[in-house]
Length: 173
Image (cartoon, rainbow, N blue to C red):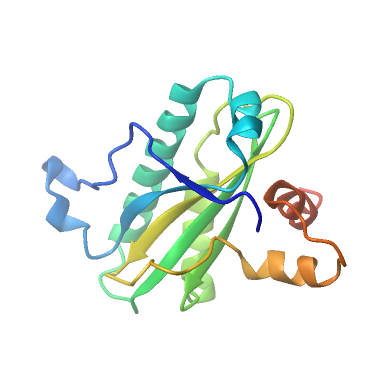
C-alpha cells in the first residue's frame, strides 16, 4: 500500500472500562495509534473537519472496546482495523490482524465498527487503520493490508493506492 503514514490525533489511545478503570478492558483491546493510508495532501482535501474525524476515531475506539470486553479470553492478536469512509456517510471495515480472529469474533468486531456513524468526507474515500492489540497481541510490524486487498492487488499489474483497493474491495453494499 502506498502513502502509508502515522499521524498524531487529539485522541486518547487509552481505553477505559466502567468507572474509568482501564484495567477492566486493557487485556481485551488496546488502540496503539492511527495509521493514515493516504498522502496528507489528499487527506486535507477529503477531511474538511479534522475534529469530526478525531471524534469518529474516538467513537470507533469506544465501540470496539465495548464489543470485545465481553470476551473473557481469546488468543492474542494484533494489527489493524482498517476503515474506509465514503462521502454520504458510508463506511466499510476490514481486519488485518495476526493471527486472524475466528470468524464469529471477526464479524462482531466489524459490526461494532460499522455501527458507528462516520465523519463527513468530501471528494472521495478516506482510508485509515486503527493499530490495535487484542489480548496483548503484538501490533508492531503488521501492515494495514487486509487479505481481501491482497487478492485484488494480485489481479492488477500496477500498484494500487489504498483508496483504490478499498473501493474495489467494497463491493456493492
